[in-house]
Length: 121
Picture 1 (cartoon, helix red, strand yellow):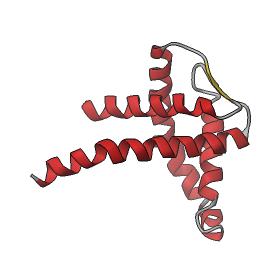
Picture 2: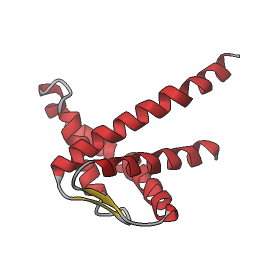
Picture 3: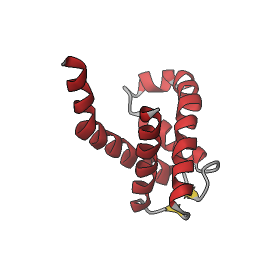
Picture 4: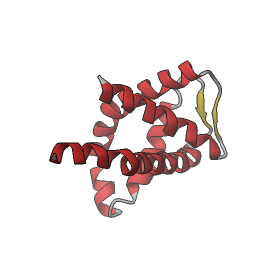
């Protein structure tokens, strides 16, 4: 249960961090942000694997660079479902997905190591 709540909070923080990108806006309350984080997590769990499989040839041909475009398109599509969150287009989605990747990297760097240390003890 703690992992699920942590994932929702991290998704919410990452979505909020993307508002620094021109073309991405969030309007709502903290509760709306948490709901958007939960929906974004479900969207990533269901839609992302299917999109990855379908785009595998493009990922191979571009040596993985298509991953940024795919994530941007998925963020743009997810914004149509997320309450209070809007992405103006695919380019803003690509930049927003880079921000989300940086936030996830930072959170995993700060807190992911503690989980690994607990397992080794």
